[in-house]
Length: 478
Image 1: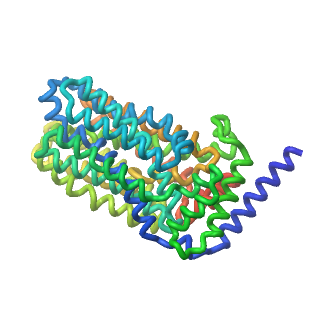
Image 2 (image 1 turned 90 degrees about the vertical axis):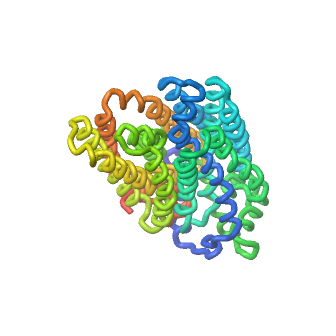
Image 3 (image 1 turned 180 degrees about the horizontal axis):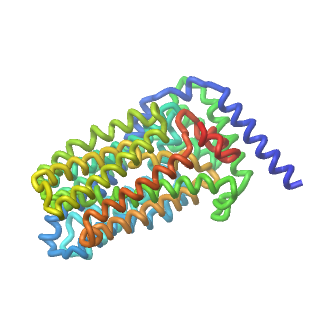
């Protein structure tokens, strides 16, 4: 009897998938001013994310001098942001489902503002570390809720582009730190990190809640009002609203959200993909290179002022490439291209430091290292920087999105904390060896992406969820 019920549920999911694919509604393809505004307000938090990520690179010398920090103390300060983000990740999914996407962003703004002000006015290392942890917890919430919110409000044919704008604003924050860090005091930089949070606090009053979250909590009237605002006042939103409600109820009835549900056979695949991409993102060295770009350039003998300025100018244009290509190329080709570039450039940076140690080509090594670091950051930005978050926001159904999203976000920030803290010590062990390790991780990442990561371009969230629940291999072969 139980077996017959399971078969019947799987058949109903497959039938619903076919219906979703065969139906077409122009209202779902509209890009309205409300969608653009809502996305902009959401990614304001991502700008603060980028500032935090690059802050240690731009503020390293000033903070260590003014507060008399040792290398160990500064490394701890740098890693506390990711440690705090790991704490925020533990609660991110639950908060997003209990409070809603907008209120969770408000909470993250409050924590980030407190954190940035604590850093800006710090008189000793205690207040400095407190601020870093507080802003880190806020970033942990932002890193989960922003891509989820954008994915849930965007039309399916541009969902990747809109969600990837999260990465664009992160790079804008990074660019500001790299460029301004050459002439602005580290305290002023901290205040600039808080500015987008104030903008988001105000802007959230003017944007709608996620219709998928409203469907989950049973607010059908509010769901329709949200869709009308997002798709336009004259749009026929009846079919899209029905699809969201039906799929939400279907996955809710199929199993209740709990930690044990993640290990059901039908969800293991998506969990492996989500966690795997986050581990690849961090252990390929991205957090270390972005947080300590100035340290790497200094060790290579390249001018930090010139290097950080050029990196700042390069940040935004290279992030635009990913925004443009994500819904044209698809997720898998862009990820493979990105990881290939990171793998090759990591190995080349290792070669550059090997030549430096052997005192070969001393006049070319600094420039070669800078070029490779620039290409590494560029290839990271077009794919691996943002796509793991895009895919994470797409592949988990509503009934496990809370638990799975929180675990994936926790894995990302925990591994980032390890890499950020250990990087300075790894450089002391072997500068070239550190980048050879990052390159080796990139090689393994290529195999993982090729074999396991699905293509989700052009599919609605309901289509993706139905496909992955019923038959994961089918979407992987697309």
